Length: 139
Image (tube, rainbow, N blue to C red; front, side, top):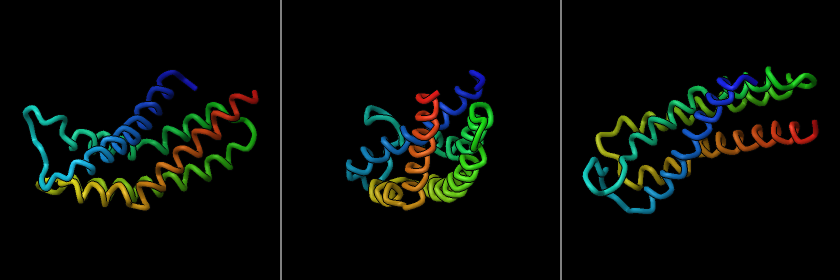
């Protein structure tokens, strides 16, 4: 896989994972409204925007890695990436809805964390990433 494609995939994965991790911490804060500046820590909007970007590109980024790295059985991986792609579209829609709110409180973030669509993306991401990693350990 080209270094450029590897970097794109890393950025996509980081956007999704870091966004989710930040949302867990944010939800635990019990905020009724969004903190927008000063000394209270980073804004959740930046993390959600990065997550949206990652959700938008992650399936294509994995598909590029599969096409570059797998000779035999690539179609099985591509079929699963289509599952990831569908889950990412649904999760991205949920994140964008939250971003459209004038203020993002902890409760709505807690509900977003619990969204089956977002959890499906995370599970899909972990599965395909580990499957690809296990192939490289065998070769």
